[in-house]
Length: 125
Image (cartoon, rainbow, N blue to C red; front, side, top):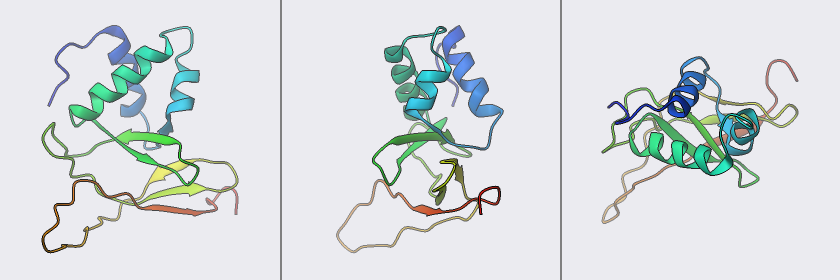
């Protein structure tokens, strides 16, 4: 689903996600776009892109929120349930290609699953 109104700021953020397979922390994004847009604008754009099914978010081991591009999600359902890997040395976070099936729990409705794997990336090991 497309974003309703693609302002210059929205296009700038979308371009970053389109050109990368990495995830970005909210802190990195605020710093990256400093001077182009204020912090509140960055947060609002990320919230909007997530609600439109264009990006998904997850929390790292320190409680920091990260965002990554969705593959086949919609505004009504995020199907990008997959593990993420965070390097303990350089801090880089990537989406892992493995599909993850959340367990079926009788009498429960699962709405969100996060799987974070930590270790050392090929550049740091």
